[in-house]
Image (cartoon, rainbow, N blue to C red; front, side, top):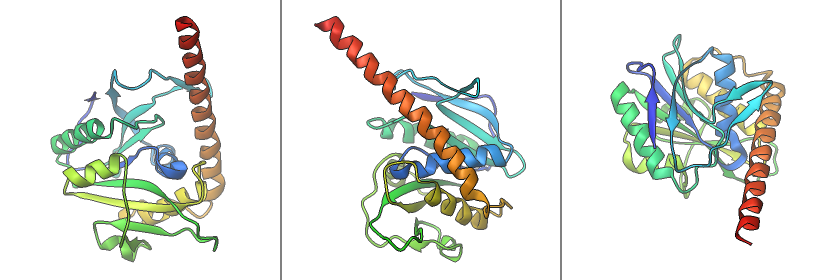
Length: 229
């Protein structure tokens, strides 16, 4: 597995949103791609993951790609693939890319399960205390998994935001809260007040793509079993 770049921005901030609980990172990065005029600058090349291609509105959706927002010098890692089992490999490539770009920091976007019924979305942070002034609370006790966990253990300049989600299903409300805090932290000037309606649209898009990819994998497994039988 490796990241192949067509362009190498210098000193960017990198935002990664790999699929996690509630798909909050995936939805949030999808929103940024469409609202910050991001351009495709690279992609992940791999043999380890399933070869899945998604088409949305007659356009090919790159399942694991690197995007750049020139006006803000932000690099966004966006993926719709389940990367379970390859977190260390992905983290290693992301760190290589960050070092090559001399990135200022990496910001991880994650979802965590909650049983809070108050209706308010709580966001926690690991890393820069400035995130507390933006509305996040420090993580006191937690178990972290996934790509962000691998980055935590191997990359010093990592800040991570964890949005409390109520379900493994796409949670646009939790994603919207992440975007609100990132907007304050990075000064993106994103109008996040009408975000929920737009986030729900992204939620439906991502949910549809993931459901279709899961169905495709199941059908492929059935075919494999029939060949063996």
